[in-house]
Image (cartoon, rainbow, N blue to C red; front, top):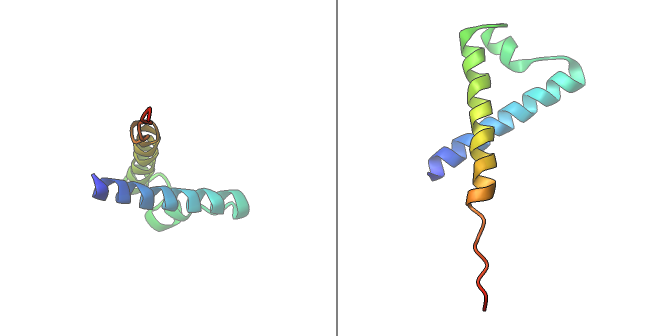
Length: 69
């Protein structure tokens, strides 16, 4: 599971940087690298979305349980 989490974090960083470039400079790095509306770009976007879902679920599942000591 650690490797899946690491891949998710890397994908979220890539997605965040891409959105930052889109917002600041109207430049989409993913589309520039793989072609606008290409299958590879679409796969990257889907993987970034799945990484976000993975981390959102982890926020709720990985919470430590408080002990009543």
